[in-house]
Image (cartoon, rainbow, N blue to C red):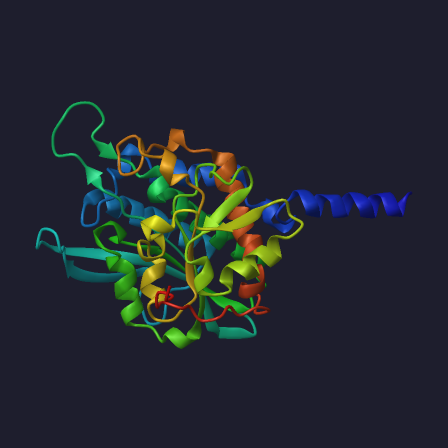
Length: 321
């Protein structure tokens, strides 16, 4: 038996894959979550509709199967609240879906893994496809939340507590994440890992993703360090003109000082035929890209969840030119 050859082969595996452990996140499971959440049955998942209620029940069911605990004093996985739609003046009731995986040695320090499960609902009239399925935006992110929840629950070795959240009403102005942020002690929240539109290969090429607000903390540098040698790379947000750091749920926590950033892969300059359109269907996404990205998030943020790295608090103020 050539031990050197075997050792070399094992090292080679580490160079090819984001993490041998992360390979337990299976494409088959990723596809099941994505296709369920983006199905016509969910009716576009608009907050306050029967469609999003179906999605909420699906996420709750998965949290229960995984064995997540409820958050603080909530009687179940729902953080329910009523708000006023700023565009219509309508009173709407929505629910963030929250599950907790308690940490070992640092259980009072929290890392959030989040995505928004709402989308735009359905067209009121017209012909043909009337459903905004929101596969990439953001069933892909919620799929990542569910896959990572199962992954870490099976590992059972997270030193910090992980709070898994499917936020509601992101499309109505980050309403769900703002509501969650009102009730927390931000000093206890070490990082926010937000997932948004992860189902397409970015302009930066295969096995890459980008991160919003890269320069606002050292969170991204920690992820880059953890991904070295894996064949997967993380880049700063290539679309500074869009102000994306403040347009997803990470912003609600970042404004409280939490180093909270959003992972994405979608080439926004090429996605005009899909963004907020009825064409954003599950079939348009690449399951390999989505699965690889979820695995890379697991590997890239591992040292934070394991309590080895603590990212610097986020900088909100715009830098002077």
